[in-house]
Length: 315
View 1: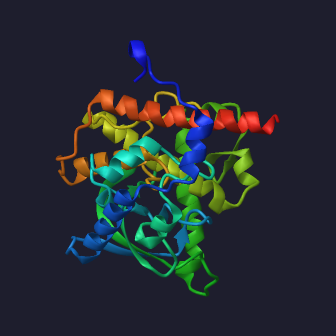
View 2: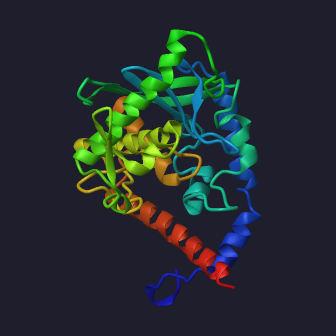
View 3: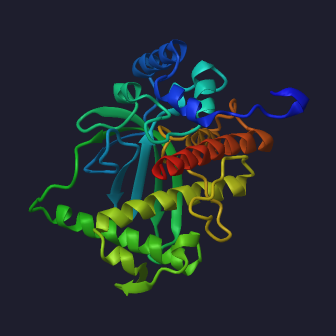
């Protein structure tokens, strides 16, 4: 803290340059690896092992995996909560880093690839959110539970009737999700003026019709999960990290939960989900003031990075 109670001004160029070359302290690394070994050896109650042939993110690592058992949908995310103890060294460093930006990941890649992200043909600990969709698109039977994920890659051609129906079922859920968002005005500001078309009796953005089914359904599933988490936190009075991506949806509570490897906010919200569904309350509740500070920290660092990017592009 600077003199006269004013915050010390941060040199963001130096901050990101230093962070780019500093992938967590030795103490944080040791803590992370220790938790990995403990997680591998403990008899943790796993409610279900999910074998899925659809995964998100075709990048270095994978944050989410999905399984469709129509009319059920299961969205799984890596179990990072068990690896980061609140208020310990690693947690404090992740709080300082706040979120991933280009060339500055929240978690170093080598730690992520140990066993904390989804990889093809490897069993990984996870948490899964499950819902059932009614005929009218209503959402039923929400659950959040510990699981294991075995990802076997993308859909491969198969002569079986079940495999042929699989992409169709995925599209049906995607159509219900976007139709529901459009009709209930749960749109982001940049979406409000997009032309809308109809497909199979459902409303859908025209631009989606020009893209592959998988690309826009992936997006809608992530938005759906974050909206459902936000509404649940609001109903339960949980002080979680709400967000406003692209301009928040009208009258919608939006709480990111899908990317704990990229954002400290998502990690906090996963802890909130655990407190609701498992009764594990030792780490909660966070106070509204603490949550506001976390959100401010994430936004400040992201905005600083975008400003630096803009300056560099103008050089």
